[in-house]
Image (tube, rainbow, N blue to C red):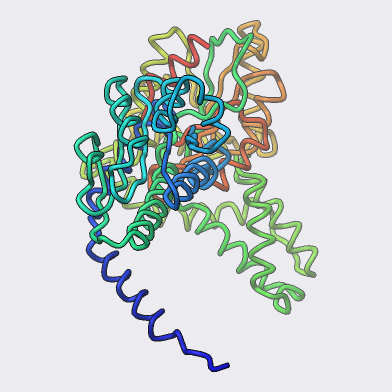
Amino acid sequence: MSSKDFTPEVRSYLDEVSGIVGRTDEKAIASIAEILLAAWKNGNTVFTAGNGGSSATASHMVNDLTKGCAVLGRNGFKAVCLSDSSAVVTCLANDFCYEDAFKIELKTLASKGDVLCVFTGSGNSENIVRACEYARSAGITVVGFLGRDGGKTLPLCDAALVAPTDCMEQIEDIHMVAEHALATVLRERLKDVWGLEVIFPPRGHDFKFALFDFDGTLSLIREGWQKIMIPYFCEELSATPEGCKEDPADIEKCVTEFVDMLTGKQTIYQCMALADEINKRGGKAEDPMVYKNEYIRRLMEKIKDRREGLADGSIDPEELLVRGSVPLLEGLLNAGIKLYCASGTDQPQVREEAALLGLDKYFGENIYGALDEHATACTKELVIKRLLAENNLDGSELLSFGDGFVEIELVSRIGGYPIAVATDESRKFGIDGWKRDRLVGAGAGAVIPDFEEADKIVSFIVNK
């Protein structure tokens, strides 16, 4: 039996579809993405429906929205695929015809503000048309994935993509490409549309005090400090008798791990860890203060322009504050919550930088940093103990905001409510996924990317 080489025909079809994809209206897909994102923000449900081959795309969309758009530990969309299966039709057979199947399911399950996404090549399937007509009457937004001229469905849509082809197979191809484009862009956007993620609610708390970390929580003056500390520490380890033989990638991994784990404590702790690693590799470690002073020298060189720009007014403090910091501080003060700030950075520098950013007026004298006389004592722990003792408080009256493992774990351990500020510092917005997971593991009760939704955060804290 002779065989035919189908390659030319396959290539011809692929090239034709590629050309159709190139003519597809990206603005229509973008407008649909905005509708779906609004549904996610508002907690609405997305319903999908399609007949024949289009039903597979409708079902696929639900999978992508519910699972593919679940990012960084959060749930994705609330989405349901309507069914025109024989089981549904049998249940409805005594009172309704097949053409009413989607409409009745929608009427039963959907509410005003929800979204209906329909997939139909002709746009004239009666069960799709009736579902769209009902949706419009019930305040449900209608999105159409259509073909040809859009048929009867097009004028019923709030937004629609019409595949630029008359071939049914290619219409379905374009619908699937559009659906995947939507899932991809929505997943990326959701990384930054974070809001407030509640890991567990603050039940039983009556907050009177709020403790803030400084660097990375309020201030971005020292953003990038890890890129100074880690390479410097790697230099020191690579210069030891054993370190010079070690794979540089292994040294960097070792340094990164202990620097990250000790973030939130005073800088001296990271320098003490460096000294231990130097001794392990056959070197003779200096006093940890030597390493601290050199690190600070290098860091101050990096951030000199930022500090000088704030001092002479050429840099707006807003540029070097985590978004929403001032509205949140004002909101907490207006709610009767007293503010404290504690940092692992040396106290004179913390107070100076707080003043440069205009934050000193919110904390007054309640700004604490590392002191040489308490070189190995945790500043945050000292501040918390002082707060509890002087005000006769228990931990349930303490709220905290921080981006370090140490402070989250510390406040959680004494019964306070720690909110993790998992800001992506390099972009100055959005969530740093690694930071978020680490802080949840430390005991964070809630996670935020920044304070942009200050009103919502204050309401959550006050109203619980």
